[in-house]
Structures are given as structure tokens and as C-alpha cells.
Image (cartoon, rainbow, N blue to C red; front, side, top):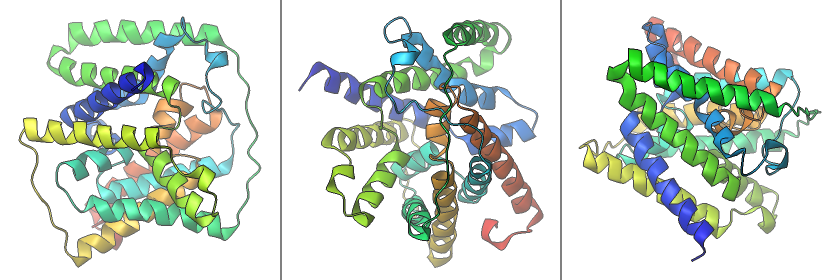
Length: 307
């Protein structure tokens, strides 16, 4: 086993464990925001920017091409809103779907199937969008952002000591995710599901996720399961037919939205935002709006799917 594979595997294990323990979930962050508590959501939205810690080793301009920026396009906003609505109905976003599944919640299995269905629906639709790449070479912005993050961390420790563990845990996920990205760019769970499905549809074996990517996903899920056992969160949840239908539909919304936005919230937070991608910011805004709308619909019993 090479040193890089060992580093990635250990990092993925720690990402899974920490995500489970800290409750890393954009839906939960928006629910806190509704109650007037911003800190979790701020930590989640800034988590990807910790990749800037590696700037002295790998300049942003020389990072792998997967750290891609695109200009504004309406499909990113629409995709974000659809993804957010699906996530609100599902009760979990991309990463937290995996954490709940690793805790024994089998309702998340139809959600993952829905992701795949959503990606394939857009693929079969034949819709083509003219995405325009956006080039930004503002490395000085990265250094300023990193300085602000470090300053914010000291501020949280000073003013919000009771939430320090949560903030610190989400920071750790961001730092480790940046390291994994540099060594294996297409590592995220939603990327894995997408490439696996599209490789079958397009009959292109070259698109199949590599063994390294499969190992990263399995190791991360193992870390999540260990976290659930360690904190006594593991318990089997067997869905009924209604729950299966609901989560399948929710996952399909998430899959279509992720396809339109070129990635789920894990991709947007950890890759698109630190790449200073205008499209990534638009997609993330759409996801926040979609989750907020979905929560409101659930509360008002307006949309049957979300009940």
C-alpha cells in the first residue's frame, strides 16, 4: 500500500467518524438558522475553504482540474432549489444521508437509489447546457479567506466555548477533505454514485469509479459506523412502503438537482465554493432556499411528499 493511499484511507475514516459525531448536515444547519443559531451553518458553509491550508504546498492555480469554476447559469439555481427541497423531505443532505445509513437507518437506501434515478433522468432527457468556465486567479483572496477563518476560530473559542467542539469537528472534516481531494479529487459520495450510474448508461467502463475511490467510500462509511457505535446512535430503522416511496422521491429530487448543479451539496461546499465558482455560490444559495422552503412546507403540511 502506497503512502498516499494510506493517508487518504485514514483521512476518510476520520471524516466519517467526525461527520457522524458532529452532526454535519446542511438541513440541520438551516434548522438551527431558523431558530436564530447561525454557528453550525457558518461552520458548514466555510468548511471547504480549509483547503487553502495547503496553498503553500500546492498553489490553487495548480490544483487538479476538478476544482472547476463555472459562470452563472440558471440551471445551478434551479438545481440547488430542487436538491434543497429533496434534502428537506429526506431530512438529510448528501453526507448526512450516509451518516444516517451508517447508523442503521435503512430509509436512506431508497434515497441513494433516488439519487441515481435523478442523475439518469437528466441523462436520458438529452438536455444539454452551455456551461461557461470561469477563470479566477485571485490567490490573495484565498490568503485573506484563510486568515478570516483562523480569526473566526479564535472568536468561537472565546465567545462560544460551548459550541467549540462542533465548530472544531466541522473544521477537521474540511481540513481532511481538502487533503483527500488533493490526492483523490473525485472522492465524494455523490460523485461516486453519479459516475457508477453514468458508466452503466453510457456503457463506458472507463467511467466506473476506481478501486481507490471505492475504498475511500467504504472507509468513510466504516468511520461513520464506528462513530454511531461509539456514541450509541446505532439502531436499525426498517422503512415501511410509505417511507420507501417518500425517500425514493426525495432522493430523485436531490439527484435531478445535483445533476443540474453539477454536484450535490458535498461537491458545492468542499470543491465549488473554495474554487470561487460563481455557479457554486448560486447552487449553494439555491440549496439553502430549497431547504428553507421545504422545512416551511413540512411545517404547514402543504406538500404531501414532505409530510
